[in-house]
Length: 581
Image 1 (cartoon, helix red, strand yellow):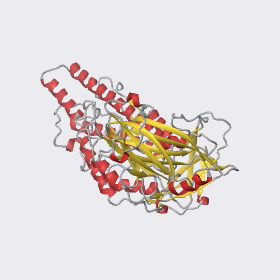
Image 2 (image 1 turned 180 degrees about the vertical axis):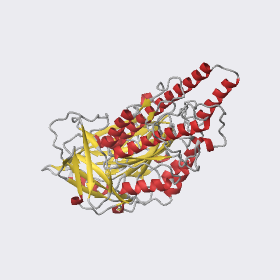
Image 3 (image 1 turned 45 degrees about the horizontal axis):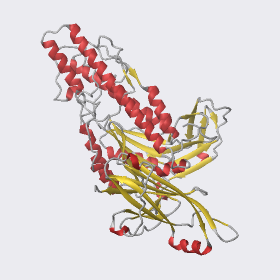
Image 4 (image 1 turned 90 degrees about the horizontal axis):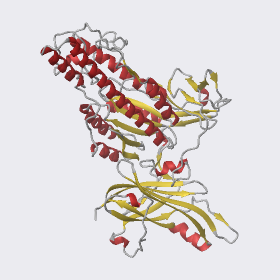
């Protein structure tokens, strides 16, 4: 966690035998920075059972939307990240099936968003408490896909190439050169996977940072290794070596700063050794594998056995039979991959789940633990912002276990970037695709195509509607946005003549299914309402009209109302299917 103000907040999950513990008081906690006890100045408990249905949402009317809250949710928000980049295709469908089963019994009020990672990070469904929406997202388009950089049969195919080369009488040098080339290629592909994955983690951290409170990132992945060890079977054992620990730590720092706890789940479940897989073929000649990183043909549901001494860090011996060498290499690789999961979980205050086929149980535990947590804050005695790492240690009376982030970097305050249509960080959050709706200002909004019969008689502007209209491709269609805003939460000031004054900002941002911004319109207006008008709109709502041009296809409209004086915000997200003309 990086310090942007003179206060450090630490989210803590307390467990006893794996079950989250609630009801603890401030005096049960001790928190240390660099070994020094810190006075606790902030203490809050968050639990899902505090979520209450606060209003009966009025029945939906055609083309009418609102930001009325269904639940107040003080517990953590949850993100499901389905990682197709690092997960074998055969395991991805199992993950989705397990998640759909879990959603049938999910606690009411649980906020979930769904992202996927393939060649890049993509939002599938924004935060919602409607489990049926999440289930539809998991079973809809954008399903499992083969990773372009993960070949689960690479080891066997490489072994076959080496065997074929040997069978035609190639020299030992030629065979060794081929093995070295295949190992270097596999390391290069792993470099790409690691970089793309960590870039996605950093992007998620930036996306989630403005959202208040704790976020649980449940990451389904076959993972990637923290390092690639020397391989004694190669001509140059150290040439394909890699160590990604520093890169992983950098991503962890950004996640911790955003109060994101990562719960990695090994999507491969229980795995069998390559030698137990009937589809693998090994020659009778000794010598190691090819240096590939495909997992050796292991499959879910195996006995999950482990060889003695696995994970010790020694390179596979060149005198081992091929099957034994493949097994040892697989064990070393899996150990390194699991080490990555454990490090990310520990650094961010989450928990890693490995060697289990019960993925829905793992998710249930992650969400249950993350839905009951404590926030502890203290003021650090910083003499200067020098960028150094400050280690945090926390203990809880009663012998309980605690999961929390392990420190922060004392970087100086930096100014957050401001988008053209956003006045502050809260506004930045409100306009993001898929962000939780805000209900500090309540409103209804009608969204209609300009050619809809219900819009007959409305005078439509002939000017382009939206800052990016000129960059839209294909056919473009005009949409009309009409508001009725509840003015009671708005910070009106009354002058002696009885006129009520306020300043509001109305923003409409259009995104495509991948979360790319297509167009937006942003309008600030001053309300100067005589007493009779003010009394009338207390009952009818304050009106506002906007227009925006949209391309054909599926579009997501983010609609935001912002009180510039009180900084209160109302926001909602509306899916629109724009027909081709």
